[in-house]
Picture 1 (cartoon, rainbow, N blue to C red):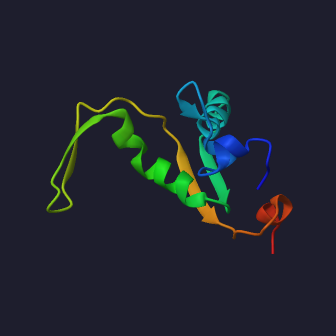
Picture 2: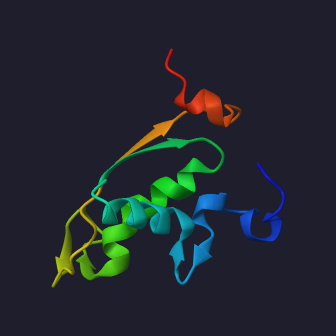
Length: 105
């Protein structure tokens, strides 16, 4: 819950601050992906729902789509190739500090 980016992070977590139209988190994952790492585990806490929402809507942000608002049908129109990443989101709690997020119980 750092304060150095307070203007940027009042409503979003630091990893979601945008640089060049993409969140910092995306840039970090893109760098790792360049070196062959495509499986990610995100330990979420403070405002983790913003990261979840971004990942869940990522495909629809990249493409045109059709959606039936009265049901659950969705169709991507001419899909573009997205990153081939596997991302696991784990809620580690609001007050867990960085070391506690990766500590094995």
